[in-house]
Length: 89
Image (cartoon, rainbow, N blue to C red; front, side):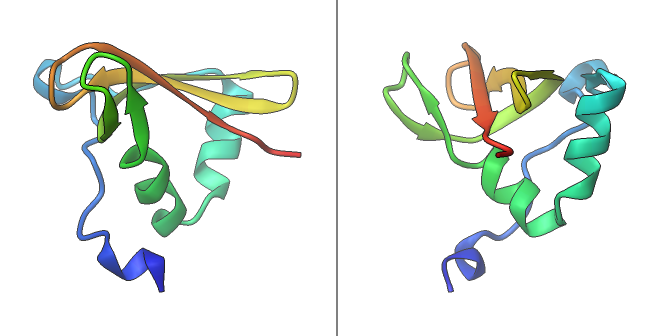
């Protein structure tokens, strides 16, 4: 199973700032409806254009656009801005 290789989730607490990620209410509902395994997979498979490869992201915010969950954060490798789209339909 592909999920067995993922050891632990990327931090979602805003990192060194200690702040919780900022979610719109709808985005929070969607994010919290995903099981932990899927959350870990999403946060640890983000493409970084600076690195350029799949990396883990420090989650900073989430919103919904056109029914899809848009997560924004920071690459844990280079610190650059990254985003992840979770298609919901």
